[in-house]
Every structure is written in structure tokens, then in C-alpha cells.
Image 1 (cartoon, rainbow, N blue to C red):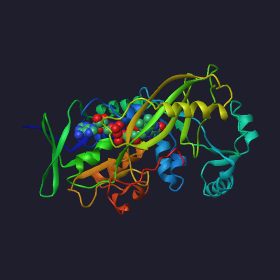
Image 2 (image 1 turned 180 degrees about the horizontal axis):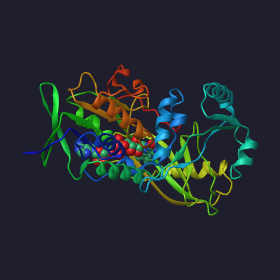
Image 3 (image 1 turned 30 degrees about the vertical axis):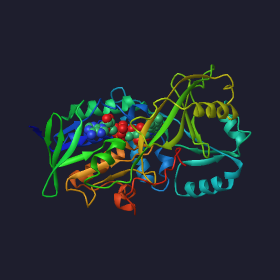
Image 4 (image 1 turned 45 degrees about the vertical axis):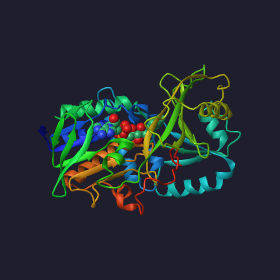
Length: 384
Ligand SMILES: Cc1cc2nc3c(=O)[nH]c(=O)nc-3n(C[C@H](O)[C@H](O)[C@H](O)COP(=O)(O)OP(=O)(O)OC[C@H]3O[C@@H](n4cnc5c(N)ncnc54)[C@H](O)[C@@H]3O)c2cc1C
């Protein structure tokens, strides 16, 4: 049974699928096919940190493109982008490297500076930096509610004419003469000359017979702490290199702490709760740099699975050895929410053949010598 003809089928209704649909819907007939609900997997579990500026110091136009999008999109529907600086707390053994890096980046025009501990404590009185040599302050960062972001993108895409189908799993690609012709689902086939697979960590398994992708699942976690006395309006975000922990305020004055990521060999069966060891780590660590957290209460916690790549950057490409018309957008490695505007634009340039306003080089599949998904997993925390 053939269901319908479209210009583009997008597989997966996570934040990437929603952003891609929005980007293409004004000019193309787009259908998004999602096996569960919209934002059912990694997207709704994300911490919502937008730290593209520290994550792409080697390529500021990519960071600027994403940050500019979040600023302009703020206030669309229920979507809000809350801007806050991010503090990278620098342990004494990393001070020399951090100061040199700041000098180099500031000379290149990146919005970054090094602050002594007393300057940080004067600006942000909840901080107690006696164990640290100071902090690298990154600007152009903030946070969002990832579910609200994905749903706003979806509603925007629908208002431009895109269709979203839920509870419909794509089981395979339709291919003829080395080109994609659409996808197969239990509900029938969807025909289209372009198929964009944005199926999170499942992308590698779905496409294994057509193109090899060095993407492996990994599990990462979050907890929320209620410090009893709220952290206040101007509280920054931040992370501690080496401790694999990042943090940001919640709008109600609680503190969200995330991190502790590990390769996951059983992604379907992985626990959705945070590990006790992670909670113990947070309980020990946070009072060492924040005042008033000795008797903080755990509000909740969770864990989710995302896709990792060997260099921590996503694959957004129309691989030359894959069937024509196939675009992959996967391996967002803990940064899919913040990278969604960039991913959507790259996909648009691949489908339409337009010029990309920034370099696509960090995202091409050919940058990897090996396509094996069995690589050593590297954890990231913001600018790590
Ligand atoms: C705990 C945690 C914290 C995080 N914090 C941040 C953060 O602060 N900032 C940030 O930018 N990122 C963060 N991330 C990462 C971010 O959530 C992901 O990178 C991002 O959500 C990936 O989006 P996606 O659309 O590629 O994948 P997903 O959200 O996983 O969506 C893929 C969708 O595809 C569907 N699908 C899969 N297979 C099929 C199929 N065969 N047919 C149809 N549909 C299919 C799935 O059901 C799913 O809905 C975090 C992730 C976790 C787990």
C-alpha cells in the first residue's frame, strides 16, 4: 500500500526532526514520521543548555548562527531563551592552560574572560571558589525548555504546511536505481525523493545496510536540587572540567546538575533513573563550590540515551557512498538541542543545494577514517 507522495520524508520527531521540518516546510511538502510521540526520546530529557559559544570556539560562525537563532526565536509561541553566562570553574592544575586559552580566544574576538576567585564571588555571592584558581566566563550562552522548544518548532512547521505522523515506525528505506524513493512503515509506504533520517541513536541501526555510521549510544543523567534558599535571578550556568558535571539554574530557583555520561551497550534496556553514584557525587561536589547547599534536597533525577560520535560532533551529511537523496542527521553527543538550528540549515542546504552560511566541514561523514560504531566514548561537558 502506498500512503502518499511528498518532497521530503523526515524520520524521527525529536528536536532535530522538528527543526528540519520547520526549515523545509515553507518550500517543500514535508512529512515527519515518528515511531512514538514528538520529543519522545533524548529531546524531552535534555537539560536545555545552549552553550554553542564555548563548544565551537574553533568555529565561531557556527556558534553565532545557533545563538542568533535562539535570540530571534525567543518569544515565539511558548518558547523562551534565558540568557546567562557560563562559568568554567578552573582547578589550580588547569590554570595556566585556561589563562592561555582565554588570551588566544579573546584575541580572536570570542566573548570570554578569566576572573579571579574574589571577582567571581563578588559578582555571584553563592559561589565559594576556595578550591579553584578562578573561572573562565563564557558569554553568549543560556538555556531553554527542550520540550517547549521542540513543540514550538513542530507547531511552526505545521503552520508552514508540514505533516507529523506519530506511532508510526519506519522499518526500512525504499531504494531504486541507487536513489531513495521513500520509506516503509507498518502503515504503508511514504514516497519522496529526499529522506532525512534524524532518528537519534537508532539512526545507525536503521541505516546499517545502506551506510556505515560511527555512532554509538551513550547514557547521560541529570538531578535537580532544591537548596531551600533559591539561587536567585542572576545565577549563572557552568561546569567543572574533570568532574564531568555541568549546572544551570531552574526558573523556580532550584539547581539542575547534569553529566556523568557513559557508553551504553543496552540502550533499549538502560535505566531511566539517575545512578545512586551520580547523586552521591553531586551531593559531595556541589557544597564544595556553592554556599547554602549543605542541606539541599534532591527534587528529582533521570537518565536518557543519545548518540555519540568519535569526535563528539554530529554527522549531518548526504554521504557520497549512500543512496542518492538520503540525508543523515545524528550523533548529537549531548548537544542536539543547541545544535538544532545549525542542523536544520545544513539539511536544507543539502536538500535544496543552497550555499551554507557557515562551514559544513565539522559535520561531514568523511572526516572519520573508521566508520566502526565500536570506538572509545568521550564524555563532554560544555567546553570540555
Ligand atoms: C539527560 C540528557 C541531558 C541533555 N542535555 C542537553 C543539553 O543541555 N543541551 C543540548 O543541546 N542537548 C542535550 N542533550 C542531548 C539532546 O537531548 C540530544 O542530542 C537531542 O535530543 C537529539 O535529538 P534527536 O532529534 O537527534 O534525537 P531524539 O530526541 O532521540 O529523537 C529521535 C526520534 O526518532 C524517533 N525514531 C527512532 N527510530 C525511528 C524509526 N525507525 N521510525 C520513526 N521514528 C523513529 C524516536 O522515537 C525519537 O523521537 C541531553 C540529553 C540527555 C539524555
